[in-house]
Amino acid sequence: MEDIYSLWHYLQERFKETLSKVSYDTWIDSAVPIRLTETNIIIEVPSSLHKDYWQNNLATRVVEGTYEFTNREVSPIFMIKNEEVKSPDKEGTHLKGKKPFKQAQLNGKYTFDTFVIGKGNQMAHAAALVVAEEPGTIYNPLFFYGGVGLGKTHLMHAIGQQMIQLRPNAKVKYVSSETFANDFINSIQNRTQEQFRNEYRSVDLLLVDDIQFFADKEGTQEEFFHTFNALYDERKQIVLTSDRLPNEIPKLQERLVSRFAWGLSVDITPPDLETRIAILRNKANSEHLEIPDDTLSYIAGQIDSNIRELEGALVRVQAYSAIQGRDITTSLAADALKSILPTDKPKAVTIYAIQQAVCKFYQLTLEELKGKKRTKNIVVPRQIAMYLCRELTDSSLPKIGQEFGGKDHTTVLHAYDKIKTIIKKDSALEHEIKTITNNLTNK
Ligand SMILES: Nc1ncnc2c1ncn2[C@@H]1O[C@H](COP(=O)(O)OP(=O)(O)OP(=O)(O)O)[C@@H](O)[C@H]1O
Image 1 (cartoon, protein in one colour):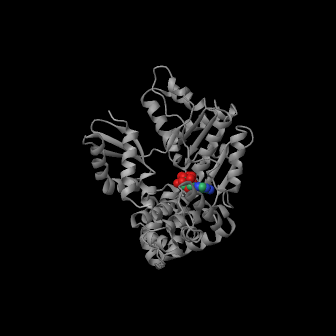
Image 2 (cartoon, protein in one colour):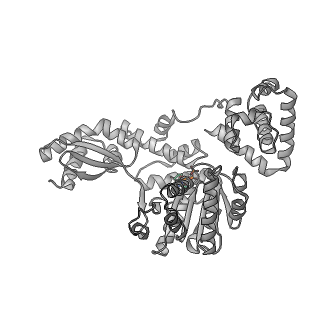
Image 3 (cartoon, protein in one colour):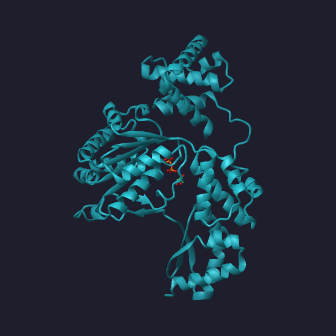
């Protein structure tokens, strides 16, 4: 069979003749040939956007070019690049005769080198570095909390990779809280609990992402409590992330909340404009994109709360420029982002949306929220929901009352006044309400 690299070289030359430089750099340079079989050529591309483009615009030329080169008809398969790289540690894969649990999956792109430091994440970055260099001693556990897409996962992976670099034999495990829960449940079903425990309790660094999803999972919390203790007693490092502080996670056992507070909790807040520009510049450089400074500032000025979306905007601008065959300028960026940027009109928030958001945050059902039960864990969220309805919608007090299971308007007014008074003194509650409001208005 022909050598795929010679074929790829042939295809590249063919594309060079027909595509503009920016198109070539965007689509062809980022693709990697993986395998040539009797019937297929497998090509790896970096994102779903690239895959669509290849399928719609370039696939036929791959078929033609391959035919010219090999005299065979093959159909192309485009695979999205799996960004995850395995940690060098392989110990767990040799457990005798037993199916191993998933090993540390660290994203090679999420390192300290690629992390831009700014006001909102300075402290988190510093703590992460300390933990990578001095695991298990100073800040244990290290707990990152903050909004969506602000770099918590990135820092976790960076810690893992830095630790492996400093101590190549270190055993690092990164999991989402859902993976932990699933591994645990599977271990019960398959009667492999001992293996599960060995796997989780023998690591030097355990990274668990998004532990707010432990809420409501009693059994998993129980198991995690023991995992935590075993690691902590052995002075192994534990790093956790969540979208909020441990004591704000509903139904998280008190003993876990108190253990999480043993170490250091650091929040990550949205980046300021300078940091956002620096993140974009870094990203543009690593993708070898030429983008004028004023265009980077323009993009960074449009998206201010979520770095994942900021990166998405850059990919969009890049693709738009390639499709249009135009250089990246501010006006091109404005065209490219038109459809994803919020319009000036504020998004209408409805009573129903508020009820949903409050239920989600406090892990209640809609029936409980709208019902008559007067236990504290329901009454306060109910009053918060009523407060938010008054603050964020134009609805009248009777209308709000009606939407809460037919309550009187004086009940709504009482709830509103009560919450308004409490938040002046109770900053934790104020923070919770802010988080719910952000969830409602940012998405
Ligand atoms: N300071 C930074 N420098 C460079 N890139 C960053 C930075 N912060 C975040 N990013 C990038 O933004 C994207 C989102 O970050 P990440 O996935 O770590 O967010 P997160 O806080 O874990 O979000 P979630 O709550 O959704 O899990 C990633 O691609 C990450 O590399």
